[in-house]
Length: 125
Image 1 (cartoon, rainbow, N blue to C red):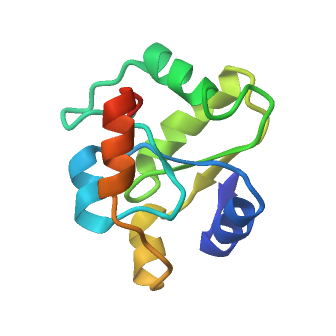
Image 2: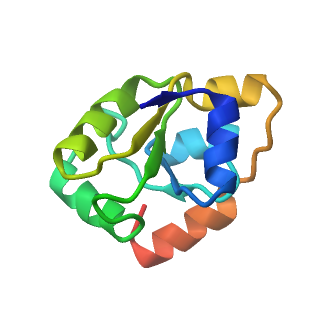
């Protein structure tokens, strides 16, 4: 389900988890939507391990639970959304224009450093 920034703000404030699938350098460059879970799907070369990624997603949201996925511009999340849908996730929200649009609207951003340190320590990024 494609959503815009207003819908992202509403859904995330109601408790739907946001999974940011970008890479660590991207998180550090722009910041993150407050409360996002940092979980890279595609590395800098475009490689992915969807099975391992799915196991990490399941720790955040179980199949059947709603989940929001976002990236830089909305392109990578199309593949992530389709993959999750095939794995039993019935409400997968894809942020259409990604963090770029969120930032361009001057919406709140948090430093990625604390979340990145936490997920690196737990080996969940």
